[in-house]
Image 1 (cartoon, helix red, strand yellow):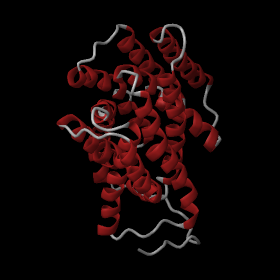
Image 2 (cartoon, rainbow, N blue to C red):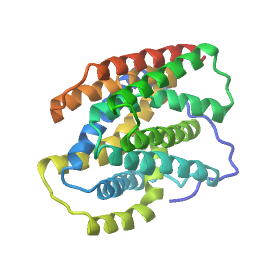
Image 3 (cartoon, helix red, strand yellow):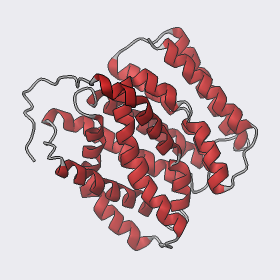
Image 4 (cartoon, rainbow, N blue to C red):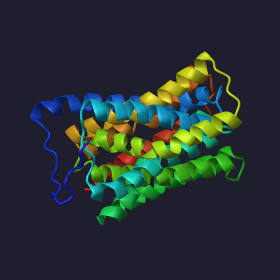
Length: 303
């Protein structure tokens, strides 16, 4: 692979008109893939320890991503892109999967889905700070209302206080939002799938020894659920889902793609019932719907 010249000024990628017609389908497939992440993680935890699951999923996803980069002979990113890729790797490849996996040891997927439903809002807030935009008062009011709804839900579900799992989930929101924000910035000058692919490859020097160490210390009990869960979070959630998501987002634009992502928490609630047999409290779908409304308001107000 050859490195791109760092002296060349970055240019925005032009999207052909035919690609826009298929963009909505690709973005929707990405949302569907992401909505299965928590149930698949819960399945994976049936046979793997949390550290093993996160490290092995990163290695497998990096192998798939690296194979695609080699097969297509993609040149190395410009030197100026590597710091941003490191932020994506820390947030999306390492931080979010690890923190949510640790949370799901004691939290239900339905509970986690409602909390992480704040991710679009958190990403919008960090993006505003990173880019320097000035969202309207309506935007901030809706964002705060959505955050208040989720905090009230978590406190009510936890018996009046935040649990360790809740703290893991709120930390996951911050690191993932940082990774999404930086990834969105990089996707303006390079194909979005290459952003996550290079971030995964960048983690290989850490994920390989981490996987070996974790597997040597945590017991492994292979079963249909654990293997299927591992394969999905590695290939589906960590790479292929992000590929179609970024391609769809590039084709139809971030605002329209974000509208599709509003359905993700509600889809996860459905999967938690169908795949895991969880019983939802009335508060879970109501809070998810309230967050959906708040996010819809922010999407209309952010312009």
